Amino acid sequence: MPVPFKHCVMIECFKNFQLVELIVNAVGINQQAYFQQQPQLQSTTGSQNVWIKAIETFSNQALPLSPITTANAVATPADITNATLTIVESGTENKKQIPLARLNRSFAATATFVPFPPPLFRFKNLYTVDWTKCYLTMVAASVTPTPFSYLFGVYYDYQPDSYDMT
Image (cartoon, rainbow, N blue to C red; front, top):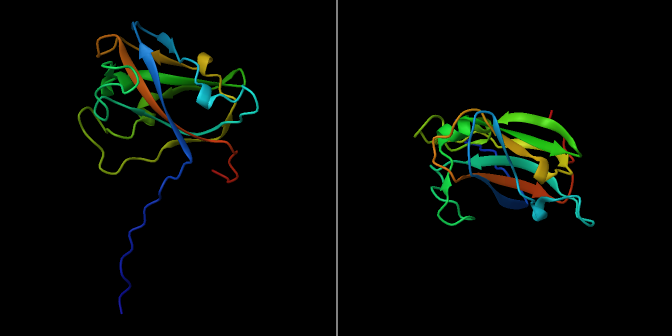
């Protein structure tokens, strides 16, 4: 008797999610835009310990307008491919110039949705992120008129990773 075909899909399971917005008011060549304080994601206040598990970004193809800043346009796929993310952990820029295109799972190229998105950009034990020192670098002028928003989905937990990602 033939064995039936099984279709297995790895499901991403995360305990907590926070949508984070970075508003860009002006764009120049190699200009940096810094994040605002993110109290829900901050490990340096009180006894709260927050471990960032994964980050993704959303273009205007997923959300045309920001749900955080009313009527603010969201970055286009061209704006996303034009920027990098630097994360400051414990005062060190050890996650430097991550291409935002690598963090976006909803388009393969301009105006093309991905039917089976790639996996999330995950981190292992990313802790004590100083959000006010984290920034985006825009390599060239933006396509979207300013002001506009970059939106990030941040998956987090209050426990460190106990598995080996290697």
